Image 1 (cartoon, rainbow over the protein chains, first blue to last red):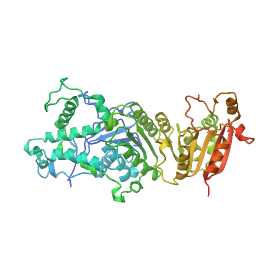
Image 2 (cartoon, rainbow over the protein chains, first blue to last red):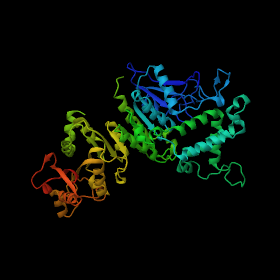
Image 3 (cartoon, chains in turn brown, red):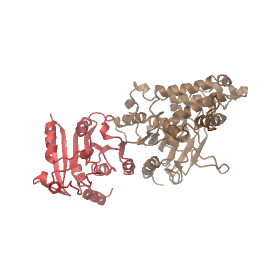
Image 4 (cartoon, each protein chain N blue to C red):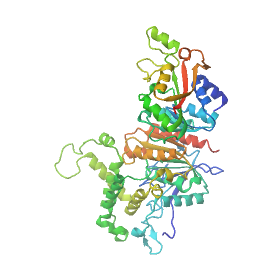
Length: 352
Length: 204
């Protein structure tokens, strides 16, 4: 149990008079509150979903009041494992509780209360963010009109949990991890975090996208017959791993992957996803990407089927894209047209 | 959609009015190959139906969403496995029958997920089509706007053919409306009708 917690959030646009134009953006594993735009003093730091959200973009901040937050347990300003535990004066570390998608939704609902939002026009997210959007319609069916669940799944497959387990093992077995209390040792389990991110990154891209971008290109143009970095892809993955390990908290990574693994709304209904959605009332847009093998279209179709079986309003599009799981963050004409059309429809439901 | 829009729609797609006439208020419908969602929109506005469209084309998916109708992107040829049995009052296949490859299994699937099926299709037996063939050319008309080399239509049939098919497959025809343009045709429909709408269910 946490005695108290803080959530870091950003908002864009203006809440209309009857507070009916609010959109909540839920982030995935490595995301945070900075979803769109850039800061006056930092023009290079664009929000992680800046392609989708902003003035004139599919989620038009001239019409909508958009809320982005850093989830509880995160490492971008919200209370998380690296925050100071007031009872000990030291970082929580290993004592920070495991949080679930359901917990996040509850904390987000409390943020909504604080902002005076009784009902969101939409809750949206990709991947782990999509799971939160789905959970909103199960935990608080009366508080969300539209759910946009993008590149997500009703629960992880064994293969997907396996990837997470390898990533966690990399962190847990790093000697610098110190059972999660590395802060007091003045070290960071960089090697573990880097490996975890490298593995994750492979699964977010498609075979074709990697082949297109890197092929078998060599850094020096010739084979070295050794164990140094030779191929472009090796160099890219290590760069991504290093970049990530420099700012992301290892305990947060563990916590986020566990939240992914635990998400399974059908579990308490005898694995019957139809029953899990029986209480849902929202309208849904479900999107998947053809080359996403981490959260495959088949997983999205399982969500769609459960919604259909409950006679809920749902539209589904399977977007042809070469970029694998990462597609949901990319600029893509058809994907953005679908989003634009759907948000256009949502905007018609309220008055400015 | 305004009344005027509905009138325009009826002129462009006379089968829509004929299909709407078959459907009672508040019915549940599944529209296969729903295109831009115009029919579903029309049925929502005039019949307060609850329903979904199934469509494969990206541009049509966007149009359906703009039209405010539910659309599921899927290939009809792979079946309707995502839909439960008897989930709908009506399953509609409007101007799509002739373009389906696995026509018979699809019609069986329609009657699995719906209580009744409704199909509309261009009548290949229409006299103008017959005349075209008699004069040595494949017919190209308002109802059959394609050249032989770019047509999506692979299973053209006449009204007689469709009725024979129903008899052979134990499908019971409940209603048939034959049209040419916006007018209903009663005299020698297989000769004078350019388009037909059939409502049917499983026999017995």
